[in-house]
Structure formats: structure tokens, C-alpha cells
Image (cartoon, rainbow, N blue to C red; front, side, top):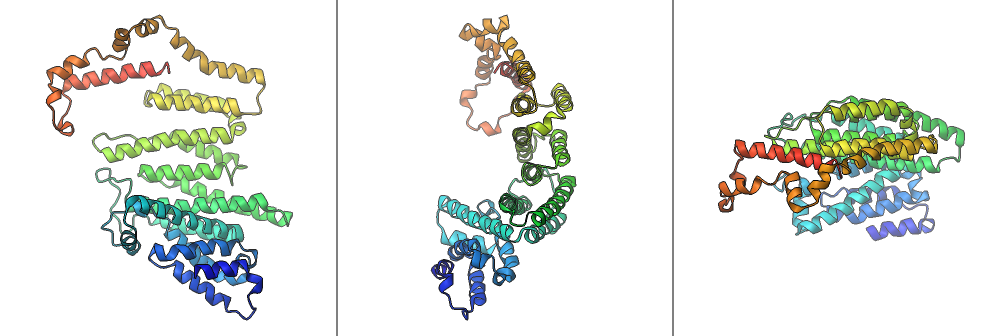
Length: 422
């Protein structure tokens, strides 16, 4: 059937006019909808070819199949490799039966997702506003009822691969695919400049309203929050790159994001760290893509960054990331005089140079013993010997006593001081 579909795409001009193409396309859709991905994928690939065809993909014949295709591809973007193997999902059951090894399964699912994303992109490229509005409304409705039938959020039982998180990730992947399709349309539109421009403005106004509503949603899950900010930055630097006010709202959300780690709940704390690290990455994306817009509010940003750093609530890595954010704006901006740029950039480098020129640092680095002392490692050996750690069989069951915790805190502080020089 896949070969037949590819033949039709290549030889459409040779197909008789009385050929029942609509029912054949319905058959292709039914095969692609098979719960077995191994059966589905050959025809899924065929659909990417059919949608690229101007004759087929652009014809009214395919219109009734657009919504089912979007539904199919959206539902298949969930990360099945992260689902528990005892799940009652029929597609996962087939997958475990059809593909034996984990690496083969991951590679297969990667390809399946790639073709699903391509189909969504092509549909948006063909149908623009109709497809985008359908996708955004579906995702919005799902987010409003995300925990229906699910246990409420809890840091105690938290998992980064819960069904709720997997569902959000798949839906946002759909939106990202739609965004790629829209950007391809925007880059190539112009056959009817006035009409296309009006359509673009209307769509981007609606997209902005949807994104603002998304930012206002308050989810406790750090991974969901991470995906929301990723999506907001993606829109801000592409489809909404002319909406400066929206970009500043996204920036404000990143800078004001405050999630507290809870060491007693390891999975939740790891997710918070992941959110914090990704926030720093998103800041760099904004600085790299929109430096001129950020330069206009640079003074306020600089004050906010200094306020965050001086609060003492961020670790050394994030302090460096905030400084890098400011550095990137100055480095990339085109609306700044060369001499002013150089002066600003020197301001970032001078404190680091001064740290390296400290006499106590020279003394500490002149010998191995001095370096050992700088890091606070001189007490560690005696502590480990007295606690007979070489006899410990299960490190997971061991806990630091008060002396060990105090030593650990001192080491952390010394490492922070040494990292300021790097």
C-alpha cells in the first residue's frame, strides 16, 4: 500500500479522473491509524509524500482527512519509551512485541515521531490559520483538564515521566511542529502580499493571546513549567519576533521564576534543577536572538540581575549564566557604539582578572599543598580514616554526622570561591 501511495504521488497525472482517490486516501488513513506502529509507519511516510504534492496536498480531496491526520499524529508524539512497560496502552503492547531491544525501539520511535512532526508541519503549511487554531484550541482544552482522572500533583510521589508530564510534552511537540510549519509559510508567502500580510497579522495576534494565556497558567510541576517557558521563548524568537512586549513578558517570567529544591524529595529536586538550568539556556536564546530589543531595557536588566545575584539564593553556575546573559546582549547588539561596547565588555572581564591577581591565590597555586588547602581538603583524609569508610559496603545507607555535614558545607563554600576565578 505504501508503494501504491508513492506511485500515485509520482504519477498523479497518469491516474484516470474516474479513479476513486478519496476512498483510497481513506484506506491510507485507516492503515496509518493501526495501533501497531510497525504496520502504520510505511503509510505514515507515504502521507508525508502525498502532502508535499501540490496536486494532492493542495486539493480539496484531502480536506476531510486533515483533522483525522492531525489527531493521529498528535496522539503518536507521546514518548512511549518513557511509559511503564505494564501500561495497558495497545500501541505500547504491540511495540514491545514487535521490536525486541531497547535501542532499536528508541531508534524506531525517533523515526516515527519525525514523520509525525513532518505531517503536522505540512498540514500547517497548507492550511495555515485553520490548522493552527485547531491545534492551539485542542492543546488549551487539554491543559485545562490536565489532571482529570489523575492523582493531584505531589512532590512526595513526583516523577519526571508521569503520564501528565508525557502528555504535556507530546502536546507541546505538536505546537512546536505547527510553529515550524507556520514559519515556512511566513518565509515563502507573498503571492498575494496584502491578503497574506493581513492573515499573518491576525494569526500572530491570536498566537500572542494564546501564549499569554499559557504563561498565566500556574503549574507546580517544574518540568511542565520548563516546557511552557521553552515554548514561549520559541514563539518569541520566531513567529512573535516583532512583538517586543511579549518578549519582555517571557523574560520577566524567566527572571521571576522561583522554585525551591526539597532535598528530601530527590526526584522533585532534580526536576527543579533541570528547570533552573533550562531557564539559563532560554535567557541565552533570547539574548542571542533579540539583543537589540533587550539593549533598550539593558539598565533595568542589569539592576535585576545584580539584585538576583546579591540575594545569595543562586549558585555560582547560575551567577555566571546571568552575567553571560548581559554579556551576550552587549556583544550581539547592533545599536551600540564600538567604544561603548568595548567599555561594557571590559567591565565583565576586569573582576575576573582581579581575582586571578590576588596574592593569596598565587600562594595557594604555587604548590600542591597550597591547592589542597585552598579547596579545604586537608581535613578530609583524617575524617574518612576515623569513620573507616574503606569498610563501608552500602554507601546509600550511610549518612553524614554533624562534623561531616559541617565539613561538606565548608567544602562547598571553598569551591564556590575557587570557581569565581574560572
